[in-house]
Length: 193
Image (cartoon, rainbow, N blue to C red; front, side, top):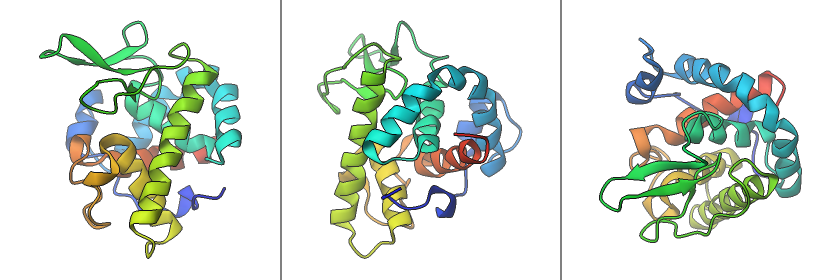
């Protein structure tokens, strides 16, 4: 694919904070792989839609699956398609499997399609490509794999918060977003996505 080789992206995997979601007594790549495997059965029902979005946007389907795993646990933690409840606003911040940010103070996007639809997955993948391209322009000296990882981090927190490759996750949820997603994507790639 045109955005770097997901299998060649360096990753430390999930932080202890992220691994705690599944009450794992370990962190790192092993924890990311365990969480990806936990979501694999639920992910199967979306495989054709994931493959469609991946082919349309030139993104590895395994990466889309990994974002779905990280964001919504393949839909398992959503409430009628909504996630990331904001107590202060009394509203949900994100929509769908890929958790597109609809908060007017955040991404401010309009949710497209049903939460588990091809249309939604195309919207989420288009946003990912947008951020990869923003990171490419911001850091033209980075390798394609570094730009891909930076784009994954930006999907979570915006490109303005990516300042260096060494600290790419310093502002992401759990301070591990791109590292965890990359490790999950590598697991999905090896296991048929």
